[in-house]
Length: 155
Image (cartoon, rainbow, N blue to C red; front, side, top):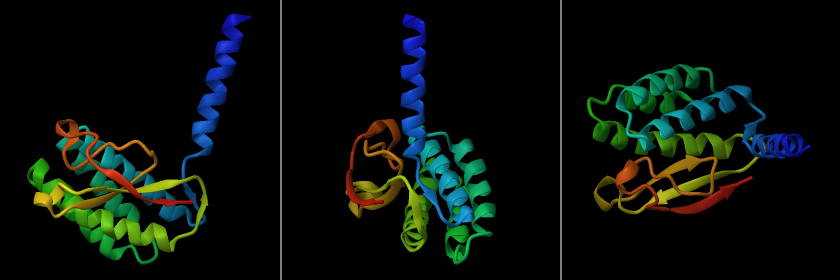
């Protein structure tokens, strides 16, 4: 009985977190956003090789998105960055382009957050998009994982 209750509770929690994942009316934009999140997560983990491969996939996905050409060009810059620092610098511009796309797109379910780190880019600051309200900074990884704040909530 106890095992059944634990399993049921786990299932309910996983379904509620799945229900909160942002989805878009435009499937191609949704696919691109999910790839963008993978790039962000690879930067948070400071895994340069993963950044290269996920950003390359993102670039291809963005080619299918209406008005995605500028974002695709920025994804190419991220994927071809020679160092993690180069990738993070290019990610800043990619994030701005992705924010433009998702704000213009129709979010059909879930919530996403526009986060900001004032110390990124040599204290010029930089934005990124996230599924979670908790800050996980892609510009500094574990050096300053929680540096930043939510600037905007999109529903």
